[in-house]
Image (tube, rainbow, N blue to C red):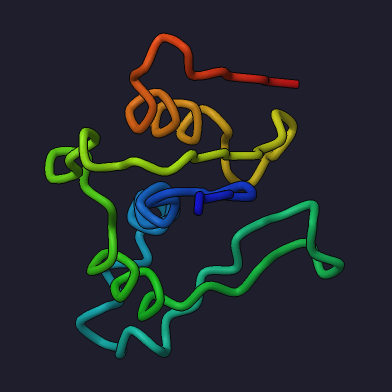
Length: 114
């Protein structure tokens, strides 16, 4: 048994929530429902140049965040491997590195970044 995460993007929507807030889209919340507010997030991976993300999705994702404070690393007994490209412009691999270090504090844990 083990876990493999490909570009796991743990809690990545928090960054997008901040982008939405910085753009002032949250001010429209009182006039609209969360499903009506769409943020077209720029992305080089989309043929159209952006991905539509609803505020409803961002709000819902916050209910499912992983919180470092409540994860008991000592009870994780299976190997964990994260694969995340350094050139990912949509979701930085730095967050993945932080989680990998936190989940595998063992000095023998390997980190391979390319």
